[in-house]
Length: 260
Image (cartoon, rainbow, N blue to C red; front, side, top):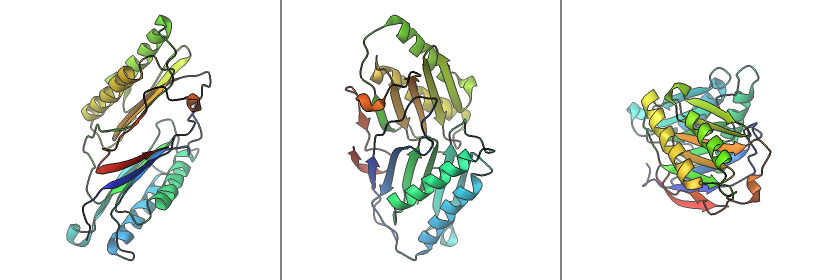
């Protein structure tokens, strides 16, 4: 039914603001498989059912995963998950609105594609025709660093304090650390075990420290987790990416990437 799967990945870099947080529907990245399903096929129906389940579930749960089985559980099966940022509440409806927006944008971005993923500021959604649920994946998807601000021992101490807290396994799957004007946030997807989550976050945090160095801010998104730090003074990611911008072409089956 499908040819060899590759992904077309489109990354748009917007102003994300600080961790007092930009609008939850701010686009971070998105990607789609290059293989297409046949219009009117059972797989199309299964994808639509999966995405509808995301939207319905997000009013009750901040994370969930689904499998819609194809014929005899084989060809045509689709797997997916959604997750809201850890501080989004169900009562306010922010999680549900973010997931609905993500599903809408993913449907437009990846129309007819056998797989796709989309990260907004406040939530993440992904589906595929091959199961990825419960599988740890530390592939670098996006790495962005602000312009270097020069070495300052106090700033580096605060940065290390923030990311040090993000490194602690007692922080759970969603972690926020603050030191002075610096703050950081980290999260992994809910399908990972506690040990897998810790392993993924340690990889992201390690890359954040080594790759972004003395940058004013930094973001590292791996396939199953992310870590970020920023000043709370309202600095702009539009002010430049220094010399450390990477948008990886290795995400899932990704082999072609556009960074804007």
